[in-house]
Image (cartoon, rainbow, N blue to C red; front, top):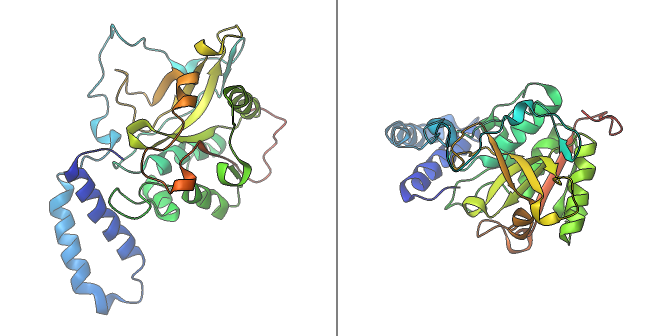
Length: 270
């Protein structure tokens, strides 16, 4: 879901080819010439594809950055004022528009240890699209579809509503984290971007203005440490918790979902 025109064009052709090929079983003779032509074009275009955050891994890192403190989130311990899903593995997306599937992959890893499906396999089930195509990116329905097909228990903003106040939002976050459940959220970052809330720190006081969220970010290129984690203001996130221009009108406000595998024990924090 990034900007440049050429990446959007490449992503669009790539997505069309990907889904076209996947839906053409039994029709090879009728479409072989078209598929061969598309494949040839894709070979030429892929060399110019940005490849998502994974393609620029660590290229924006700044050692001992004077502006961003390096925090070893993976080894932080939950306790005191910090609620954290410990040793949460991150993943960097491999296209400019698959932040949703990449975020979902980390949730699967969290519960199962390893993800049985790749980012692009997840994207196909979610019906993820590049910009310039109807319903670009991955909407909440698509995100939910993947987990539902796997038999997971899914809750989302479309069926269960969203927190209407900041105080309700913090309560919502803490209730899920206490049960070991990461929260997939989409907001205005990059014009529309899925990340996963995995931690919340009150900083030991009741002043919500200094609360922080720890999120797993599949496009982590803006804090001088390409480790897949962001530490962000909880209040700033809440008041920017809307989609800029990608989703349908009634699906742009405070989108989220949680998913847990069959038999998950909510009374036992992971």
